[in-house]
Amino acid sequence: MQEFQGKVAVITGGASGIGLGLARRCATEGMRIVLADIEAAALTRAADELRAGGAQVLAVPTDVAQAAAVDELARQTMDHFGAVHLLCNNAGVGGGGTVWESSLADWQWVLGVNLWGVIHGLRAFVPLMLNGDSAGHIVNTASIAGLTVTPGIGTYTVSKHAVVALSETLYQELAQRKAKIKVSVLCPGFVNTRIMDSERNRPAALRSDQPASPRLATMQDRMRQEVEAGQSTERVAATVFAAIRAEQFYILTHPEMKASVQARMDSILTDSDPPRFVPPPQHA
Image 1: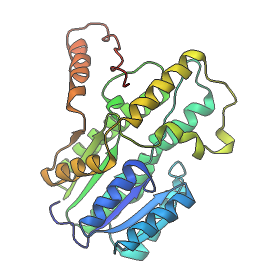
Image 2: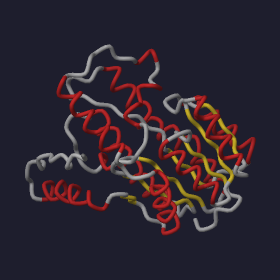
Image 3: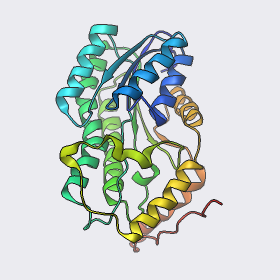
Image 4: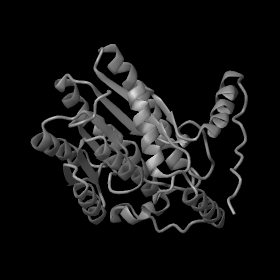
């Protein structure tokens, strides 16, 4: 996909963070934008900002964990713009705790948004994009945690590994069909977003009353510091659009983290134990 002017982009989790960064870049490229987010007030603010800059925007409150909601997003997109060219399955939440201490509600919430949200997006939009028979691109947001393993965020890590595998499978299946749709999986490192405040959008039915352990609280404080010092969403968006133009599948925003990916691959190929996790240097 090389031409963006007048094309239609659908972005889930588009009201903040990486999603809003992508939306702003889409507006700069002259795209028509469908913004989806569960956070209604933030969605309205984001849409107003983009419209003030001259972009055509359809804002649709959407809980991506619900198939019916994503189907409705697709229906409204087609009714309003009549096509989809760029699909960014970006909505995501953070989640922490050991594998055995994470509650059932923790697993349901994180997998519901991070994995099922992508599944619902693909099921709803890929047929529409195939029927459109024009050049298109799909970007699924995973994480560097989808290529490595960090102890203490098991629910998040599992969801992001699954998104990577799902994206690789989609890539192969579309290639077999010789489709005009290309695929990328975005695996960012620390980015300055509100992911550490994901609980603000957690459904009441999936709330967990289990308090964070002292070890988890310490880890969360450290991760919050890393996120706040992280890469800007504008820089991530620029990297994504360069990858779309280059038809690049894996998008790693932090090249220095490739060493951890290499260490994990080496342990698999040499029948070794997983490499020990080494936390990044703490920012002052």
